[in-house]
Length: 272
Image 1 (tube, one colour):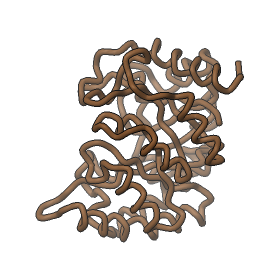
Image 2 (tube, one colour; image 1 turned 90 degrees about the horizontal axis):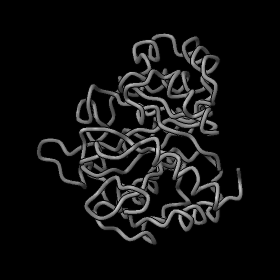
Image 3 (tube, one colour; image 1 turned 30 degrees about the horizontal axis):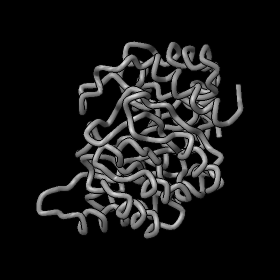
Image 4 (cartoon, helix red, strand yellow; image 1 turned 180 degrees about the horizontal axis):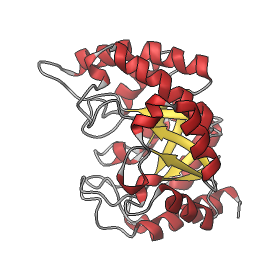
């Protein structure tokens, strides 16, 4: 397992600057997406994925660990709970080419939001229909497709996350324990998802707080790292402290908390 940081952790920094921070901290990778000053050019991802991916790979001092892709402009537009969309699949094929060229082993998507007259059952069926050809496209491209169960989506419980990955052979999770801890799920319930992990996010949390200082949260990260190891996970662990106007995540010193999480993993793993 290796550490990365998310580019959106440093909203005022360019991608090159965010990657430089990772390098200075001795962190090997960076997750990229379409947010803030570090944003990728989504139009170029879709129009010239091979050239743009190679450009990103060659320009950064650390590896590209993952791409966070949104199909629409926000969480609701073109979201997967609406079911199979040929344009979404076509876009994902381009995204997978970008990932391959950039060296990113995984792309993560969101499961979707409840639409008009939808409940969780209808949304789950829609997401399953959307994801099956996407996961197959990922297999063909050699890039893992992962879904992040998150608060405010319809996939808010470990049980629903498990049902989704079981229904789509080859699908993995971007496993972020904070999104379960904030709602009150126990860590042992979260860790049962470790065998399905394809990518991982790390930040401290507690019931009612999606993000917390390391000393103020309830997640036991050494135990979480051990659960991932025991599940034979050997991918990236992305430190994802943020400064966003979302669920009161505006108030932490992102750099300090990133270093604390880095040091927590180093202490557990024996790596320096």
